[in-house]
Image (cartoon, rainbow, N blue to C red; front, side, top):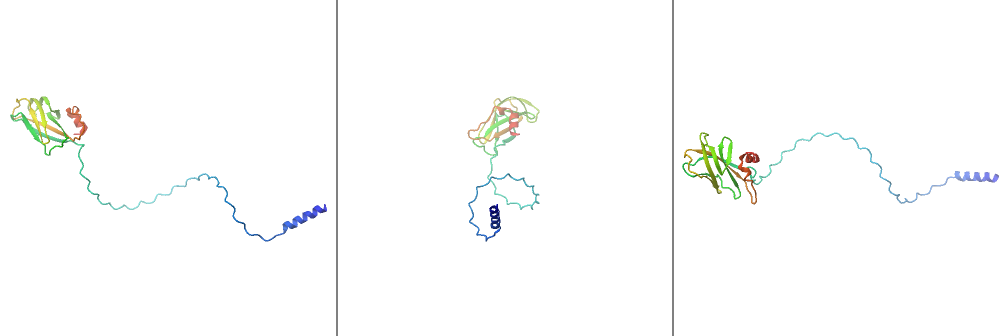
Amino acid sequence: MKKSLLFCVIVVLLAACKGEQGEVGPQGPAGPKGETGTAGPQGAQGTTGTQGPKGDTGTTGAQGPAGQDAAQPKVFDFTAAFAGELFTTFTFPKALDRYDFVLIYIQKDVDLYSALPFKSWAYTADGENLQNLDLSFEHNKEIVRINANKNDIPADYTFKYRIVVLKGAAGGRVNAERYRNYANLKLDYNL
């Protein structure tokens, strides 16, 4: 047991000895990347800043090219008499385009229009006389000619007409049968 006691005393003495510290060794290799942590909570919204001053008005842009008024038809109202002739005419203020579509109506009573060709009764423009009419029409780019197919219309009777010109296009289609009823035309084009 003496030997064991001696051994323990030597170990304690050696452990209590202090020597000089050596130099720091080189850095070791980087370790593997760790797992991504969970996202933290969203921060509170900041306060809205004050509105800045109103900016200057920008410069006016260049004038664009003239557009085509294709959606709204041209409407021409006129009153005419046959004055003992078999036809009466209307001259367009500007020649029509090649594909324009012309519809002609006679006002047969207050706010009641019927398409030409027309074979029925209609009131004169003053609403005083009722006349049996048989009318047809033809037109070109500059005029409309309304034909009376019988010569029994008094020379002083005048009638109100409405010409509606729909803008056309090559290959375009118009439901002419639908527009024989003026109410449909009025509805479709807000006339």
